[in-house]
Structure formats: structure tokens, C-alpha cells
Image (cartoon, rainbow, N blue to C red; front, top):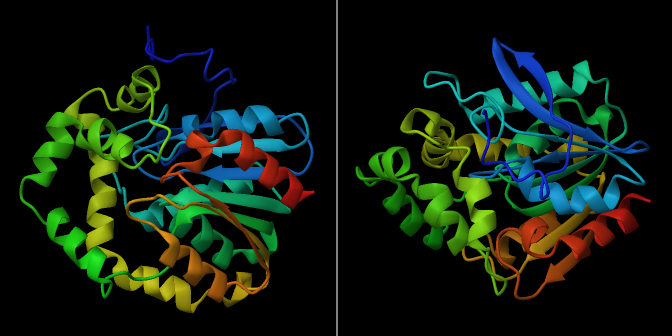
Length: 285
């Protein structure tokens, strides 16, 4: 049985699929009302927003995608897994579903993907919610310089492809005080069942190495969305995307609100779902 590993008690949603360039893009579409569009990062998928969506779908229409290469979407061995192509795919979904006045909710790589889409078509987006993400080059940051040296290791492609390194080790290490239960970790590792299905996660490593100038271009071209209402929900114990990232978002988006989650790591939507859902509901109205 396909996806027999999937815990439908944890993820009790109807699956939808959309053909994108010959690949099946998986998404969920729950509830009705004002649209919340959730865009995940790596190595996660729409699963990490599940508890937030369950709390909000009684009031909002909640749409959450799985990027090609992640979750329940197709994972071709050969594909354009560039961050810019993920952005193009997101825009295709928005247009085909005719989404309007969206509250865009982005996390991790969902930031540059979702926010670049919003910069391209700002009229589609009403509000923005950012959870532990970025939108600029970090190549001058001392911590990121050290991190990039690790990313350049010739061992890393092997670790990603053959040991499923990103969801097995990187993801749980990014949590704060509330650790991820092994039962739930399985829902993050099993989508990458074989080495050929792990190219999407590996591509995001290469994006961190090669797309820094593009990230900076996005920051410098943010004006079309700079006056949008922005809610910044931040896990303050994130070992990589910490409070300095929060500070820069706050400086770059004038109409912002901040919600700090002490003791929370990189995944607020997984670690503190009830609070995140309440903050989004209070913000989106």
C-alpha cells in the first residue's frame, strides 16, 4: 500500500493532487473562509503544519503544499529542484486554485519561496506570517560562514542520499526544549524512503551554497510587500535562524508584530502549535 507509513490520526486530511510539469504536487485544502497558504521548508512537508491547520480550519480555508521532492508529492530523481522553480510551482498552484487575499504563512525555505512569489504578485497577498526564516544573503555572517564550510563537505551528498541525514539528524537537533517523539520523527523520515527520493532535500543544501546573491536580491526588491501586515512568530532557541534574523525582518517590514517563543527551536508550528494557531487567528482576523 502506498504511504502505508502515514499516520492518518496525526494527519487526518483529504489529499489533493495537481499536475505540475508532469509531476504530481500534493496539497491539502481544508475549511472555508479567508485563505491561509502554508509553505514549508526542508526537510519537512505539510505535516508540520497539521496541528495548526486542525485548529484553524473551522474559521479559515487552509491550503498547504508539499514541494515536489517532499511529503506526498512526487520525488523524481531528475528534476529542477531549484528554489526559483519551487517559487514558480507555488504560483501555479495559487493561480489554478484562484486564491486571493491570501495570508501567506512561511517557514524556513518557505520564506524565500513564498515571499519571492509574493514580491512577484503582491496583489495576491493580504498578510504575511513568518516563522524562523530568512530573505537575504548570509554569506558575510560569521556563523553562516562556518556553517557553509560544513555544507561544502564532500561527505554531505553521501550523508543526505544514503543515510537520510537531514530528517533523521538535522531536523530533531533543531528542536528546542520540547523534543520530537520518535513516532512523529517517522513521519518526517519515511517520505524519503530511498536514495533516489532524497534529491529535493539535497538541492536545498546546494541552494544555501549557491543562491546567496539571489536571496540578497529578494531582500533588496521587497518593496512591493514591505508595507504588508507581517506577523513574526519566532522560536528563540533556534540553533541556526536565531533572534538576529528576527531583528532584520522587523527592520525591513515596517508594519510588523512579533511573538517570541522562549524555549522553542526551529519548528514553532510543530513544537508550539496551539500558540502559533492562536497568534495567526488573532492576526488574520
